[in-house]
Length: 109
Ligand code: SF4
Ligand code: SF4
Image 1 (cartoon, protein in one colour):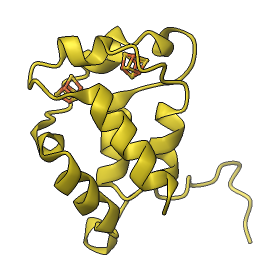
Image 2: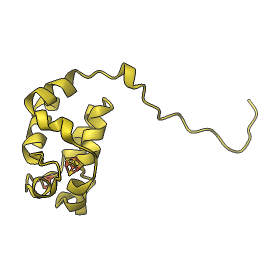
Image 3: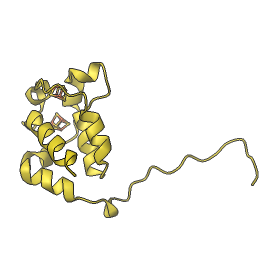
């Protein structure tokens, strides 16, 4: 193989047609507001834990939509359930309760 001095990064493309949506459906059944998220990031911007460790409700929801359950759990690992994200969500999603449901459903998979 010829060494060009560089290499191509592996594709990070996700084929959404092949994503297993079983967990997503269970979460949406338990927390119908889950579908209202518009990924605005207000929750992440105000997150108490996010100031010290990578924690983001927005990224967790996006990870779940892409079938990346472990990544979603990682994003919520440091959550202290303070509820600040619930106060600022423009869609009125009870994010605190949603986090508990995500951890419950994804944790028992
Ligand atoms: S409840 Fe969790 S995710 Fe929401 S602001 Fe507090 S620490 Fe961050
Ligand atoms: S603040 Fe609400 S709508 Fe915005 S990303 Fe967070 S959960 Fe979604």
